[in-house]
Length: 103
Ligand SMILES: [Zn+2]
Image (cartoon, rainbow, N blue to C red):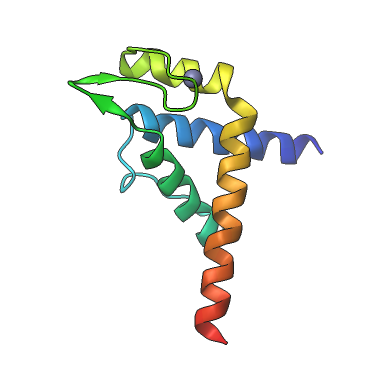
């Protein structure tokens, strides 16, 4: 259980890093997480990167503008469980698409 909790924290942390631009989606990789989860983290991170005239705005609640660091903290503090939900939905979607391709 504790291990799974750590995992979830990592997922939210990576999504927030990509969304805030602290880390590029191509820089992110993980040997621990399954391939479709890595892809889901990249996709969700990019979906949440809403940059308008050089400032970051949160597309979930509309707050902002944020600096990179400020947006990272906003996401991990305010939307922690939403980040994980979004990644889980996206990972399921990717896994479903992959299955359809094979069969
Ligand atoms: Zn927000």
